[in-house]
Image (cartoon, rainbow, N blue to C red; front, side, top):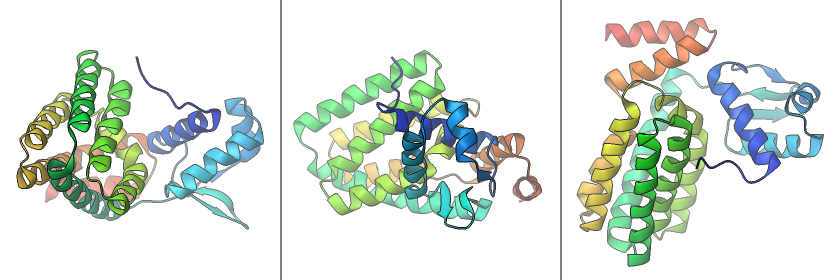
Length: 235
C-alpha cells in the first residue's frame, strides 16, 4: 500500500510540494495562506507547520514583508545540487557497505522488495515513497550522524525533482535495477563499488538532465526553463 504522511501538516506539505513541481505554484509566486487553508480544508496551524517544513527544506522562502514565496531554482542550481547529492550518497554508501549490521541488511532487502512491488504496480507515487525509505536506510547505515543529517536535508530539498524524474518514461524500472546493484554491492561489502553505483544513480547528466528539464518545461510557465532546455539539446 502507498504510504502517506502521518500528520495533517505533513500531508499538506506534500500537496504544496507537488504543486510547486507541477507548476501550480511557480517560482516567485506568493502563497496566500488563507486561500491554501481553504483549498486543503485545514486550519492555519497545520498549514503554517507545513510551510515551515517547506522553508526548512528550501522549497519556499518566508520573509516578514513578502510572506511565503516559492523559492526559485535555476537549471544550473539543479545541476549543482544533484552533483552534491551524488557525492553525499556515495559517501553514505561507502560507509554503509562497511558498517551496516545484519539487521540493517535485512531492512534494506525488505525495502528493495517494497520498491519492486511499486514498480510492478507501475505506481510512481508509491515507488517515490519506497525509494525515499530506501535511501534513508542507506544514510542511517553509514552510522555517521552528521553525514546522515546533511544527506537527508538535501534529499528533502531535491525530493520534488526526484519525484518528477520517476515520471519520465522508463525511469522507474531503471531506478529499480540500479537499486538492485546498490544492494548487491552493500551486501558484498564493496565500499568503492557501492559509492560508484550510488553516484551514478543520483547524477543527472546529458539526456537524463534534458529529460528532467523537458518535464519541468512542460509543466512550468517560464521562458528561462525553455531556454535552458533548448541549450541542453544543442550541447
